[in-house]
Image (cartoon, rainbow, N blue to C red; front, top):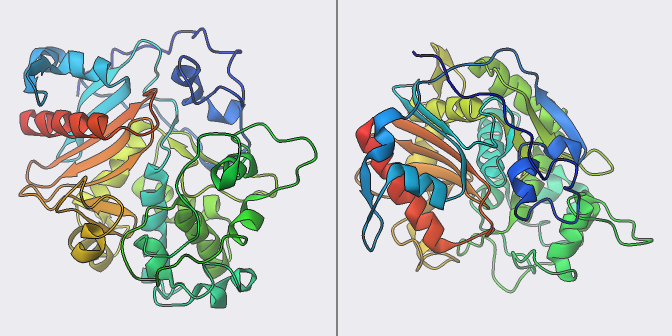
Length: 392
């Protein structure tokens, strides 16, 4: 491999100006997404042990790709998509790295809802080790959920986002569940006199009108509850379990952590920060049937179930069936159902972990897109990632 020519991130204008009221908005997010630990309490997953290198994109940046209504260069696409870092790997070897002027490829970047997929992998390890029954009813593991929407759901329902909950996935504004959620996880400023914690908020969620096990309903609360279930099942804090069963066996080299609330509960749905290099390692474990460096980290059966399982009807009839036809959702991962066998994890503001088995490619894209969610940007990102995978 050639030396990584990227330098330390330059001082950013938002450093020192970002706070809980603005850190997820431009221009503050350029700095804040790689410095979450300076704004929100965190629990450590891994300490930095080394600084791996990768070749630059080089001439690949000038290659043109389809945009849906024309063509553009990979370089322009990266900038148009507010990319902070993109790392492309071929056969597990870092093949191309691009960083924005304000970014540092060795700094942990907030993965947002890619965290869900990491949490899903941790649940897979707990299952393989005999600690977690995926058919168990939640209330048997977390008695405090009795009477809530989670109480009579199963772990499998949580993993596949098929729990019927009386909430939506709206986080804008200052009222409603989404606003309380952001304050509970300490991502937004507290309201005067309000006493709220993450787990307590989850137990107040009622059951929706549907039965559990029905259509796919994307609710981050499911993934947070998986974190609670894991802690109860394995008798260990979420961050330490993820460290022990994922980061240590895969040889994680960079700093990683997860945001926590005032009682120390990890935000397993969206609070994990890690480096692009380590996130790529996790993707490679999925691509290689659960193994890395000759060591079996994940159960091959769980990996196969994640990639090939999932309820096609639940997806078709669910929240995004019309938007992303042909997909499936299993164990907190998306399977695209295409000829490449592509699976991916994604998070708001443009975070992606993309795995393309046919091209033997794993690509990480960290971003600071202004829009939390935008279907057109997602479609453009998939076109970009497909194009990079084909050229590696």
